[in-house]
Image 1 (cartoon, rainbow, N blue to C red):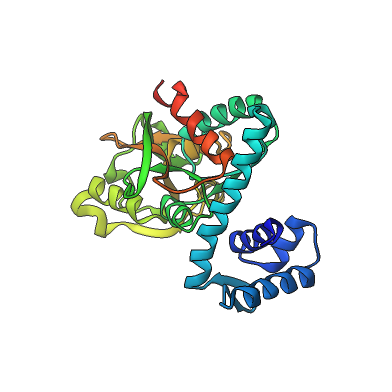
Image 2 (cartoon, rainbow, N blue to C red):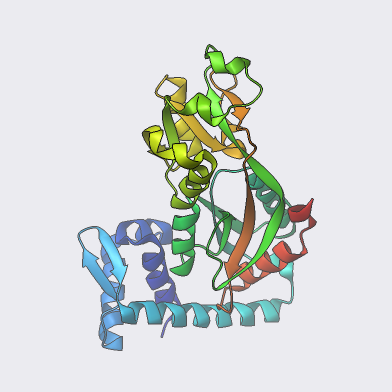
Length: 295
């Protein structure tokens, strides 16, 4: 079996689209479709379910994906062993993360990593912890940066020392700007913009306590930046992590921390006992050695 066809199959599995995979592989979409149809015929099983523009894997396709990754991993290990030089390592590592202060630590880690391995490309996908966890289990994300609480079953992880505070975004002309902190009584009758993620909502529900059912939740948003845009237009009051709010324009929105203080921690995680490419293995090895997570 041609390793090239395995890469074609994995590209389609990752992108869930023949068109996007073909663009990434620099081949035509009909050529890609023919190659994978021939692969299915050779194997005698259906690997892909084609539903309009969306592509999903069958059970056999999921199994074959694992085997394809193992085969390509063996090929890359063999090539690297023959080269014997880490600096020649190339490939892609996919990182999933949300919007929080720890992303700045991730950015510093990635900068240092690429100084050592300049041929490696790092793909960053911004999503909630729930979506990142799902993508990681499906093999679409190699490493995830998660805000706790998060399900760590099947994962190895490092807890990042710095905590992220929860804040409210206020327009400069809002009377609440004069306060040092924002208390729950300040928000009871306000149109709120809350995080979409269930875990984050539960955390805030505990903070508001019995008053949570009285809240006027006007919007939910999976991105703090979008919540900030809504707030800057007077749509509501975003309750967000300080790390996400850090990139709001200060002339449009002012951050005020909640009181009593509420914080969240972050972990950097990867799947346990899963065959990865040498590039991903080296990325994880460097994560473990990086001191910045605990500063």
